[in-house]
Length: 362
Image 1 (cartoon, rainbow, N blue to C red):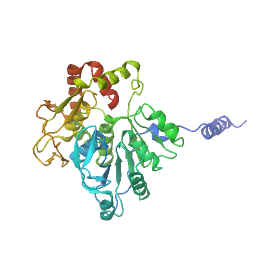
Image 2: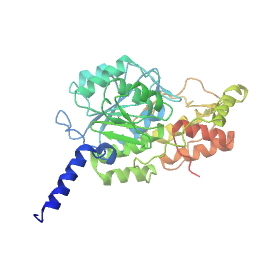
Image 3: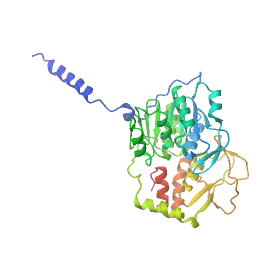
Image 4: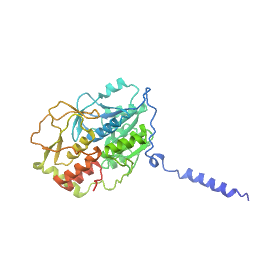
């Protein structure tokens, strides 16, 4: 017998096994590997459009990618709304967009390089879905944040791909879009020219991953240090995030105790940190006991990265004033959750973290 025959047989067997039992798709094995398409129209850096519905767009889903990418200085970032006028963020804050979708399309007929899709009040908006589909057809990378996955999925960009979303929507979106492989236990998933994240706070590591893909690891580390972030990997444990009887009754109890509800006033001045403010306002407005507002006399206030904030009309002179934590922006949430627990109890802090899909730091 030829002495090479056993080796040849083993090699043939290996090839056969690979054919029958293919390895896991690279998008799951190497989810950090974003391969950006060539920037369009001779651009030296990408044009990133963050979609917004004026009627309601999730606060941190929009503000955090904007703040991270603008402050890193690696891309041109614009907020593109469905129509002209103020964009109402939910559950707190109001902002002015940079352009409408119609104006953006007129100015950039070649389309954006990256489109970021936050969660929106109307996750079936025909205008938004059509715009996402058109941008994708022009070669844009589509990034859904949290339940922005509904809009991206309805635009068809996740068909045949791996994706993820907020824990609360996971089972429903998996039933609705069976052609997509929905994945647990990842803060974000990249599959080809699409990216998706789990709950609200996953926007921070996802944004840093985009910075790294655009400008390299050193730039991402620098941005992470400024934010107070050590790890922006996709590692995530989805198991703790689910509804329990105790949590249900805390939601119900806080909602029904309307006599204990209060307005929380957050001061803001020119040059404020939009990430810290967004995290703080978002958290205080998810207690089902309080609502955060910006009650300043100015018509608008510009953040350090250029976000144009619109204060609430009412002065709320009887509101409780709470300061935005003076610490690295991404750590503002930890301090806010601590303050919520001190004010309303640990069970209320828990349901806030649950909604944000954020593991409380003990």
